[in-house]
Image 1 (cartoon, rainbow, N blue to C red):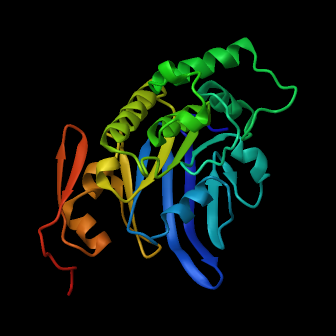
Image 2: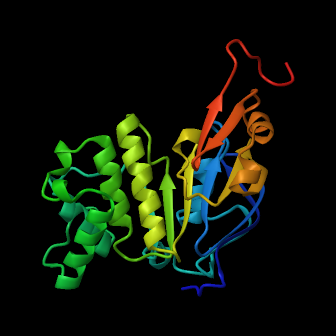
Length: 271
């Protein structure tokens, strides 16, 4: 839907109101092909609300949102969503599908395999290749109900990539993962991004340790407003993170990863 020089996402002066409450105010953002953004902020900052706009799941109250070159409100959002890879760790699945079967549902954009639909040889090869990239080949035939949270997260990323989207959205994909599972997930994302140089992505988190090393840009949200945005090394700093979370935080950056520390007994800023 877009070429390499076109923005994948354009958000311009967006407000979003729900039940009389202003959840986003005057938010603007541009994401281009090959960029990998992280969306950071405290609970209630508006991160998931903004991600739903980017995923064509809801319309803005005011302002404009263009996804893959199409303005929300002037395009069939159901068709647009088929071109977006959306990873939600709360993915609803009750059927005893194997990892491979779950990944293949990404080709039909359904939760369960469609009746009478059979993947072709190319789709099977593509699913197996994505499973390998995410380090899931030994678990390819394991049933969904037997997987750990981390294994499910990696399977869902592979599923989201089956349609070969230009845009990948990840809503707190490391939620509930232990240390080893988190690191496997983040390593898989770094490998995936290196192998798909035109892919753009936006990942939501409020834990700096969950930012993949391949991240290029960051947005800080506070109270529904953009607190800061730009290249990740310029935004994920002690000063800006402390202001965003209203709490003194010391940020360090080593081998592509971030670590946040607070002093015991430290008080909120301005108190």
